[in-house]
Image (cartoon, rainbow, N blue to C red; front, side, top):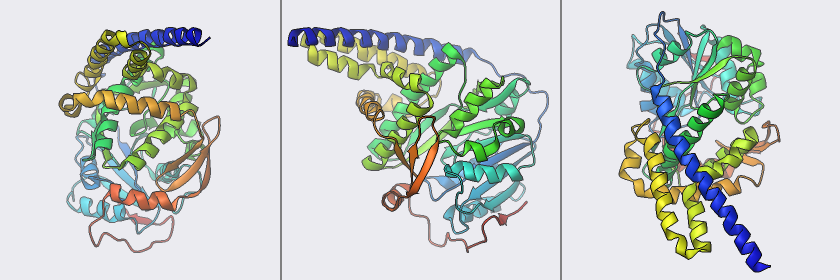
Length: 416
């Protein structure tokens, strides 16, 4: 009986390992197809509203904000949102704006505490209501963008069938090892999954750090009052827009997702939130992620069959080629080139997180604890004081004096 189980396990591992090799080959093909895509020629430049929810202090937040004030685009406005007027990010917005007196029109709005489960969507709900224009570009606080962002996004909307445009992103870590590992995972594993999905089934989802949508699409989806009931509101926007007949486009414009210097505990919580979000949003896609981590599969097979070590070497080489296709070929990522030897460790951690993601239905997000239902909806369970206290070191300590007097909820802090 034991021999039978051992042989069965070996056969399963062989099948999974071969599947991971095929997946690596598909990654290379998908990367080439993405690079061949060209942006449509821009015929006109309609005005754009850039929506920026803020919450607390992120590493390099000021630099991230500055990147939105220098975009190469003739007519755009920026709307920022904070939940409380004493959020240090509110004062930082004022500071950055003073450096660009001839910059874009700016509004800074205090939204009050969230009244829908998804706190980010709560902020976006307020910003959409105040935005003047029909093209809405939504970007997280930890995103740094290139100057051509809006031109690239608007180019895709030249096709009237396009309803949503989403940007791939390069993971940029802080100083700690854990954030470096996560960034390598984003640049070699996460993007690979996005490209394969794009190649095999088309884009029927969107990526949260930076996405754009026509106002009519957001309104047809029920606005952020409805989208705010989901953890992965970005995925829902892309999925439902696709179901409605709109095209979802993966832009050629690469943005930076700056992870910050998280310690191990916070990094694992972040990874688990991401894993559980994917599990509930794309169940089949989540199962398929087993093929994006070939090295742990090869290690398991080597442990079961020690003489199979040549397969482990071959798998490492195949994984390296696939990683190079995304990290260098698309993202021009210096980190993976410099720390390539961390790919194996990252794959093992990612594999373990993938397994843990099958268990549990609670997540913690910026000091708030949620339960996730089977359809991806959220239930707010309460503030997590422990998370908030542990998060502070990773977010950095704001400079003295960055405090804003309390303002009535819903009041505009900074107008055009």
